Length: 120
Image 1 (cartoon, rainbow, N blue to C red):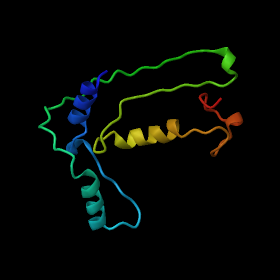
Image 2 (image 1 turned 120 degrees about the vertical axis):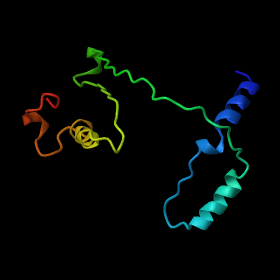
Image 3 (image 1 turned 180 degrees about the horizontal axis):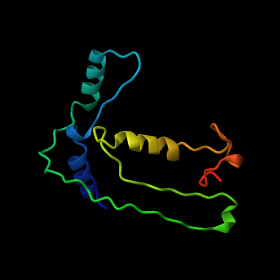
């Protein structure tokens, strides 16, 4: 990796259309514009982007057992999300709350008496 490679990468990817400026708190818009102009005013505009197609999603699951790690299981499952305006958005939000927000021994039913096999 040379300085030329790094400079080419920065020049290609660190352009105005690839950046977002966000602020929170008691800040006026005019003040944010002034700060952004002072900090990022020299950032160049990039060239036109070629049309992009949706990338192929390949769902996967990895199950690895290592008894030396103790009695706990560590796992991760992923699935392709849907856009906000999709008719399935609410279904995915429910799935997120059912699957993604589990914490041991919290919630309405304690883990030791839960009928959910994932919890047990």
